Length: 294
Image (cartoon, rainbow, N blue to C red; front, side):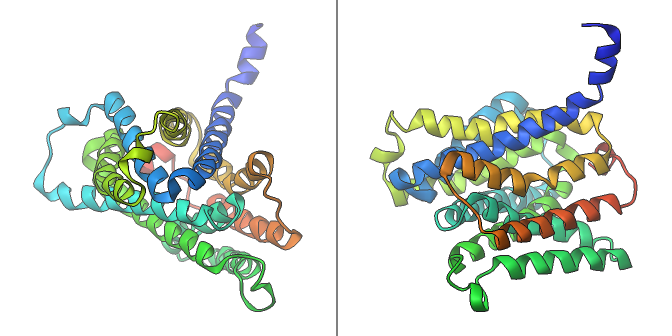
């Protein structure tokens, strides 16, 4: 490859890696959904968190860190919010399409970004989010189009995602990227036993299931997290945020490909509103690199 081509491809590499990371996360969610009829959402949640914890701890070795007493509560809150977020998201996937679940969950971090700013332009993005929710949620004439409980589970996952961001910043101040391994360990210690009680050891440790559960853990956690960390060091914060805003559409597309989940025009319009709100919020945010924010 010539030097000129390498020069052209270098800026595109982190963008490509981030898109692969998003595809990996949504592919993992699609694969997880195929396991629900066998071990249910609680079982998949527990197995994914356990296997992801083993992988992340092997990579980041959190036992080498020195823990401070004042950091224990943020770490526990971070791990708890991570576990509940995954649990509620998988419960929502049992009832509603992947793209809609991702879009509803996405309102959590979007709310954190917008309400932390409180500038006039942010009311436009808030309005777009509200419009998207009105199109999506089973209200009035749309009551038969979407499962209400599934939508509430996804919104609950969004609330936990927001808490995950808030407590993650506090917990990560002293432990850096190893925080995710610590949080994953805490969530696994809570939700793996819950999944085991609801599913049963015979099914949870079925050798025919473990390879698929491991694939879910790798696709949803270890692999995309590594790619995102690489992209974080190469991309400006606005570019990173704008690309991540496409995740609901990525989820909807992969839901069509892998799960045969087709959305209505109204639902696509709702996704567009939420994606545009996220892109707009990112574009009008104060300039700051993502690494500086961490």
